[in-house]
Length: 193
Image (cartoon, rainbow, N blue to C red; front, top):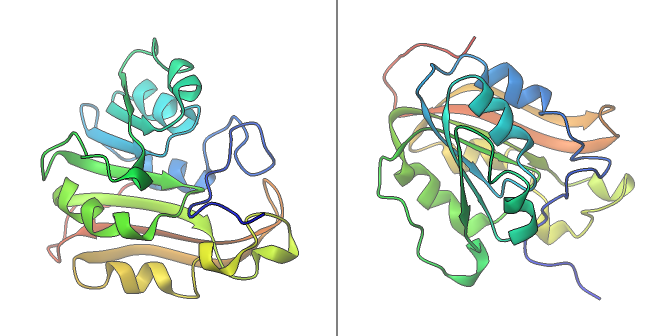
């Protein structure tokens, strides 16, 4: 049996958990109240809830109706049913968001659209699994894992890197990950705290 083209991790599993990612907390904590944020492939909304509780207006997109139902009533969160891999039209116009958060999910064809959805100076906060993760479990198919430096390469032309990390982590569970926080464009701006 082959793995699907992308690798979401369901909240409550060893990598998803119910707590926001330390990476998202570090780089999303400085977003201003009122910021418009897209939590793409949000799962059960751990990041959407956390950002909304800090005053952001969050569009939480996922293909799983049960996941979206879990966050439907949370103040500041607008659930959106979207199957990225089906070719559905994305419901947001270009330059709609101040920040986009993607964790534990990889769908390479979406990268170009992410840049278009961010306003100039907007922040991309991305964290997912990379090559070598097979030693720790799933996802394990190399077709669905980032190559070393891939997030740097994919953001090279449209973004300024604020922070980048790749390699083995021990918490919340052992894994090989790659993560980036990058600002759209090359103009300096306020860094997330």
